Image (cartoon, rainbow, N blue to C red; front, side, top):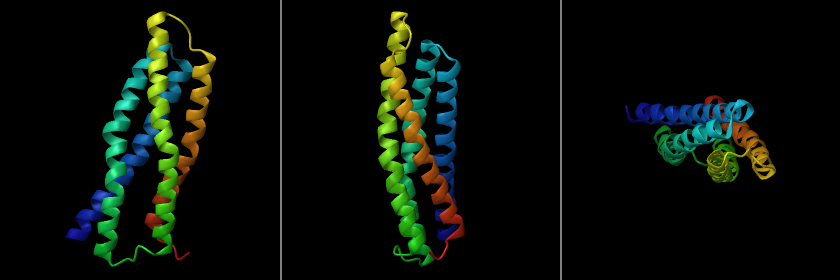
Length: 155
């Protein structure tokens, strides 16, 4: 019973990380493509809140549930697929942490532009491009981790 509870929690956490990450990216990209500074600032508020509530919580619990799940299943943490998953998880963190800071900056810059009635400047656009670029390796790494969890290949 413990194994199935841990497995369920771990799978839900993976779904939250993948789903929230994809959803946040989609809504923020769409708001930046079609939106005004007011819309971008509003969506930015929601994006930062969702990352704080959902993504950060799942990111903390994933390694915890993974550790206990591996222990319960009798897997060594030295299994190659687990080691690779952990390495990819570090890569996700390396790219995701700056993305969170960038999202906060972008939100604040958009809200300030809305307040002043100005457009978004080149500094905003440059930071937004970095946000987009950093999102790709993090998303790809999460996709690979999910594949490793499912397939557990003998590498």
